[in-house]
Image 1: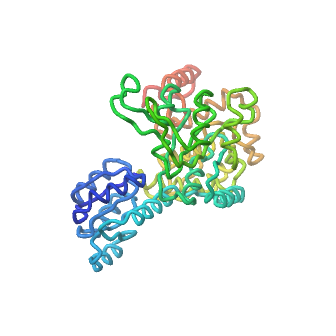
Image 2: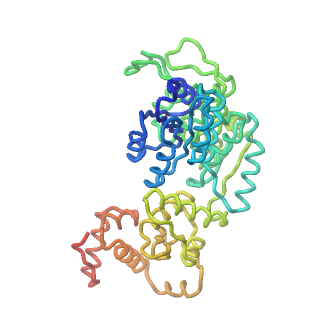
Image 3: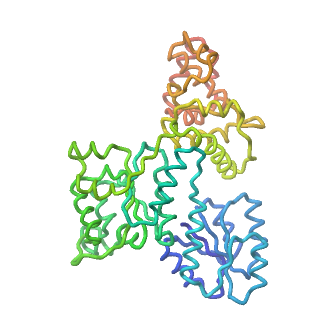
Length: 437
């Protein structure tokens, strides 16, 4: 949670910051409204603003709306500022927090803001059934293993479990085991003492300690080295960890959620994953289906992403045309929700009509297009792969006004590859304004 505190909070700014940090917040400070707006306009990711109720909250919220900045705002002030509190709520503040700050109240506000910012959008019965099960098991202390293909939204489901658990007001800490080099992952998880190795100039708290009292997400755990898996198993079983270079174990109270896009049972069989760790993690298993297997989510998510990226790029909100919807529903989405999000972001930028129509929806993998109607299938019969590829490239170039950089990004290829293709088409006699873009 990225938090911005605006004003002096009647001298309670230090206490409020300390509480917010202890609840998992990252805090930025602004003395006044203008400075706060500069921070927000700079592109810094802020999810919640706590503003001094003595400032002009109404002006601040109007400025946010004028700049199309979407962020939750709560007002803070001394308990007897009832008239200012009412005024702030009428101006559009989400909540009012009396000062001096109460740790539980600030924790609850931060948790509510996190839930709102990490809302799980769905419309399919399969997703609804998974969420029902997730909500049922969330209050327990059991480890949870989320499985499913890349891009299906496993981290969002993990946050949903945390947000509906008894630990919702505490930290949710995520570690991507695939993104951190093997040599660094141990220190990232367990921390280290000053002097533990060359470059360890100060003590560092690891993610297990950071998440103590809350939830630790071990994303793509199948990528973890098998030797480190043994230390992880001990940490989960004994509820204690050893910092690198430490002299005594440290007690932790951390709930574990793990994700994997691989078949962990097969990993156990081939010796790349410990069986005892698998059983420890797999107390509850939720498998997240691929997007193509939950079609009821596709249009709901597409419209959500249209709204998100229209606001982000300060563009007018547009409806999705029926033909564009058909295209989305007749695609297999090999990249799942992540690919859908990227596709809709492009569509928002590419749309030139009053609607987001089929011309703005550029699908990356032509082989993943289902056969939605007979005439469309027939139109492809007799054409070679090279011909279909040429049409895709030239159509994309035309839709980007022949800007090679933009077209290469949309097509997912390098500019060099695109340049070579265009040169080839020009040599073959096609009308290609090769020198443009």
